[in-house]
View 1 (cartoon, one colour):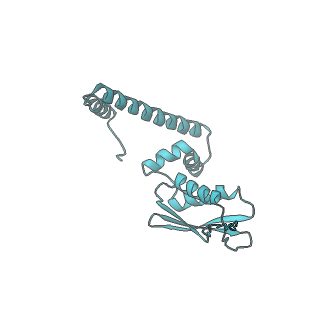
View 2: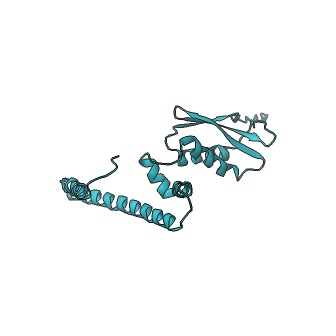
View 3: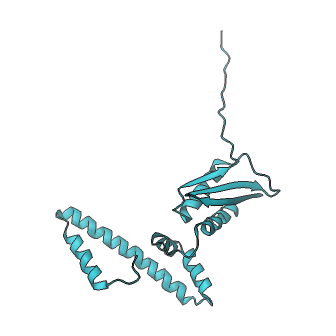
Length: 172
């Protein structure tokens, strides 16, 4: 993304692109899309101003607050400008999941080639062999929500559920 952009030229380009749609219904949908994107970015700018007005005492505080804001953080991610690396964001997301657990830790082993390797362990350090499906879902959603560049989450030590087969006796 360029660091500076000629605003008037960009606005004219957007208008020309919108006017280029031949069918009125398609043109209206394109206008709606632009309006929604402008609302989204406007809300992001509003959040940025609110954070700046809070007046933190350091650049680190400011970047942290911007990164923690769901909308601003998402916009920074989209444009490759997020101040935190992938592993840091994933560790933070996993610590949020961990807050809701009783006696378990969710540990990131690492992120490589688009895969986050995670395991769940008890407070004693033993890895769990049975992790509830809801926890698996929570971990996957937390990782993908904070690091969309992670394509896959590998959960270590999770037992695969076994099927219960009931055998009925035959009636004579």
